Amino acid sequence: MKLAVKYDKKMKIIELEDGTKVLDLLKKLKINLEEVICKRNNKIVTEFEMLKNKDNIEIINITTGG
Image 1 (cartoon, helix red, strand yellow):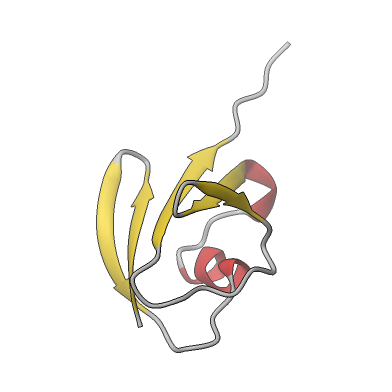
Image 2 (spheres, rainbow, N blue to C red):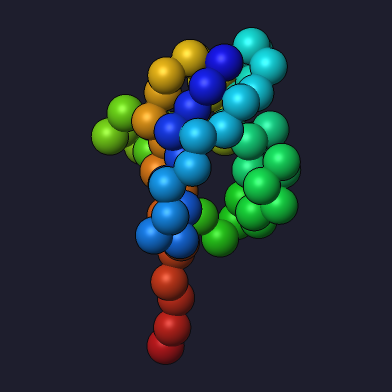
């Protein structure tokens, strides 16, 4: 399946196997799950959500400070 993935102000088309979860995508991209929030088709999703062909994924960095 093909996904459009936006991360760090860049858009990429990524090919993954069917049955891939958000967590698998983050691992493939070497992104720490605890540092981001993921949106699929403009809705926030958990790392356990299954991805589908032609999903639009946005990975948003969480900024902390004090």
